[in-house]
Image 1 (cartoon, rainbow, N blue to C red):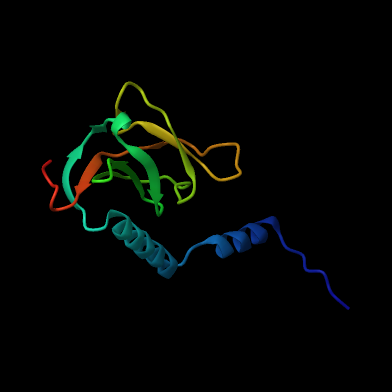
Image 2: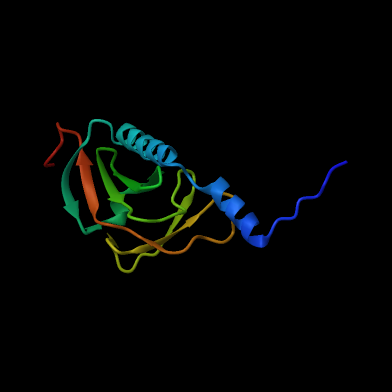
Length: 141
């Protein structure tokens, strides 16, 4: 005979949260994976300068790398990277809905993230400054 188990609402919530919480090892592995993906995306490019704004008509993208980086490509030789402080929905294969105010894409411009198959985007997130990454042989062009 199977006996039913009575659980309080608090016990159910605690069990759900315990099952959803990432361990420190999982968090460290996720950070390491993001850094590996970022290094693979950037290749041998090095950071050369940081700008508050970039010209969206000269760039392709965005590409989301891990849960931290938004990468735009400029003519394939220069990459512009904004390291996002906190945007829980940021993940590869998601789409960005960017709100441009004016002719430049700038630090503090807002965007929302749309997951595949979803119809409601995330809460607003903000871009940080954009760092230019260039190959050593083209730096300074």
